Length: 75
Image (cartoon, rainbow, N blue to C red; front, side, top):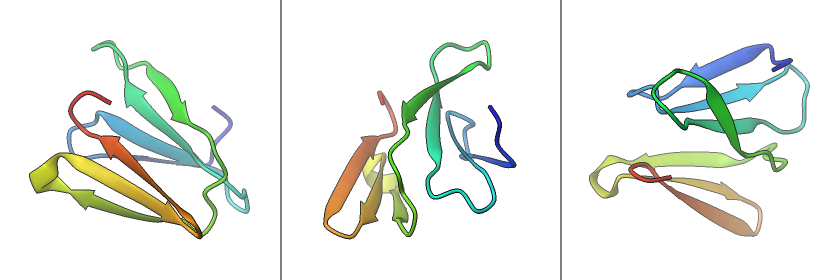
């Protein structure tokens, strides 16, 4: 993947990879139960803010003038 850091969510369904001093990061999700990852979104997200809303099973990513909503159940 060419990344220096990987972070995974609580249930290991979603992961984020990034490099030090890179302007963006990639969001991955589990496609099958074989632990291979698929890129979901590779937009530039430098300075973005993320919030997990467990009661709604979603997570939000906000940056400047846009908000992206990702569904945690059937992404």
